[in-house]
Amino acid sequence: MIRPPGFRGVAFTTAGEGDASSTSRDKISAQLGIQAQWATVNQVHGTAISIATAPGDLGDGDGIATRTVGLPIAAFTADCFGVVLEAQDSVGVVHAGWRGTAAGIVSTALRGFLFLGDPVRRAAIGPGIQACCFEVGDEVAEPFGEFVATTSWGAQSVDLQSAIGSQIGGIELWKSDACTRCGEGFFSHRGTGTDARMAAVGWLP
Image 1 (cartoon, rainbow, N blue to C red):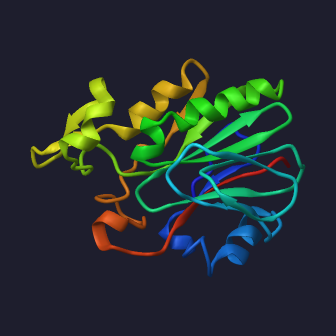
Image 2: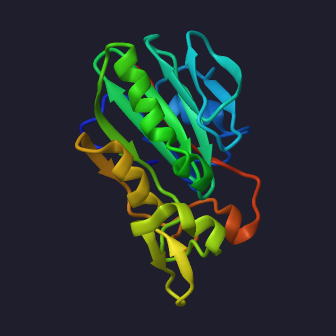
């Protein structure tokens, strides 16, 4: 489990906690001291953000925000990046793969907080596939410009974490530098084809 310092209610699970999208939610919730019923979305690699007032499936989307104290909201990852956004009276989570990042999902989420009158104060980016292992073709690299990079074996890649960070701007930012594909202790869909998922969880204590 990864708990970024200085955040009120933020956690990123690892493979050690098990499959957060199904079998291990009770265990993870007990470890964090939060309720076992979470608000989630059916992730579709887009930019839709849902507002949660109660636990349950909120339908298609890739981000959730809530003002409800004690309600865990979660995004699931296994190479994509989970991002948690903290404001004064609300919290949000975002599932940021390359499609969503290219479409500006994190910028969309930040604008949503501004619309609600509760600007984000800090953000945390969890583990994901880093440039060292994220080999891509030209069709993926094209939207990322300055964030095109090179893998550890010399192929074209994208520094997706830095692209996400650029959308966050000047807000206080914590980020994990762990790579889910070549690092130890993570689920990686690219690495093993696993259906298991880790979680980025946010809540208002």
